[in-house]
Length: 89
Image (cartoon, rainbow, N blue to C red; front, side, top):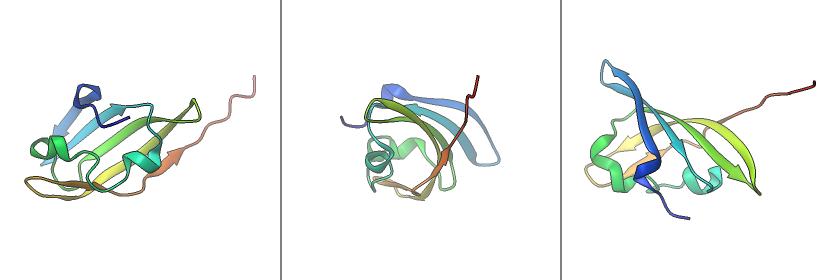
């Protein structure tokens, strides 16, 4: 699946940094590939934070990532940090 800008939501912003939420059935390995968010390059700034709800084999995976490099036509994000949780009940 390709990037879908309709699944990108601005949650908050200030001091030149924006906090985004993005949902996709793509894996984080796809999402953190350079250029994945480039169709929305005009919306991002370097260091913008993205909470990504991705998928691995149908299992939801939440990942924190941020825009490492932004130009007028390209966005590159870092690999990200997977948010893990245990639900033992």
